[in-house]
Length: 147
Image (tube, rainbow, N blue to C red):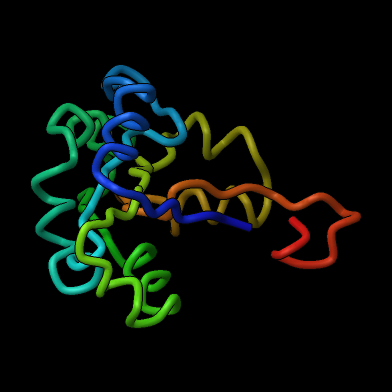
């Protein structure tokens, strides 16, 4: 389950100040938060990601996965904003709060087995712009609304 926060500029500024500076020394989740104008959450998403992601995070990502070329992907967030429908990108004075996730390093890949290890190695191997937060639902919750 996941959530995409949408809010006004003052709300986003307050959240970003509370979150603080990005950690450029080690991988965290999320690594960075970005407030992106809702009107740009489909067509101009790549531009905002390219200019908004801290350069120190790009270097850390390269160190975490020095075996491959690490790029920046916006597909996860773009998919969600498209799924939410056209009304989201029409919200003139509102922002989507995106989270930036770095690839897993080899130590993190090797600490788990099976499918999770494979996902960390082959799927979560780039800098990804994602929804605000994700998490596992509780077993007693039958669906996303309950979660």
